[in-house]
Image 1 (cartoon, rainbow, N blue to C red):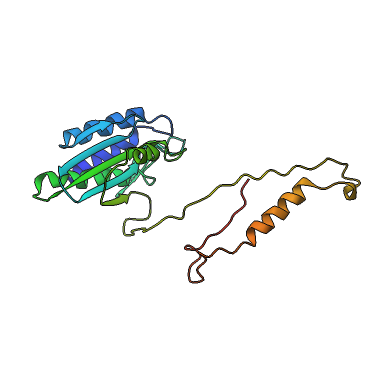
Image 2 (cartoon, rainbow, N blue to C red; image 1 turned 90 degrees about the vertical axis):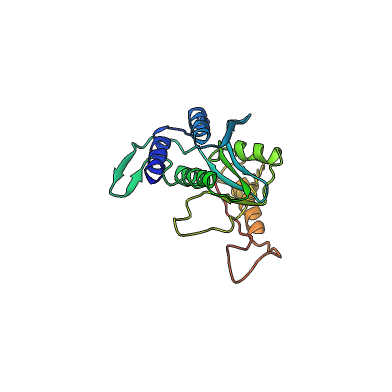
Length: 215
């Protein structure tokens, strides 16, 4: 099984799958899971879904199959493998598939759903479709690069605001004759920064609401 796990990850990495071009990878995972004894299929948006076992509890193991653009040749250096997606996040998804397949040989009650999602690096089309289908699970684990010995219990959510400030134009030689849109935008930003939320926790900035200006 160890040799198969390495082979699965290697072949997984060799399929270049930047966001929006995950079709081949979805087919690959569906076939691999089917060969391992999963009931597997590709859903409407291209997610690769596999189920194994029955009953409760239901555990969702979720990862994404798309990567950021830029092909990296797959290679081994000692016990380490390199390739686009080796860290984020094909390795964790491959590990989930291999680990789940072992339950086929064990007398363990419960169902495992493995979901290889598309468009994680984009707009989240894959996970949004999964949510829209009201997938039922008692527990969920998401594979992301938190390290081989770490379990991350939460990610900070985000709210994106686009603020547009418009003023009358004027010549920079006479700035006192008009209001500057850039300066007004910064005033708005200063007000946002000065907001103190009830969720602020002094013991951890991670658990507090924070703000950041981006371009």
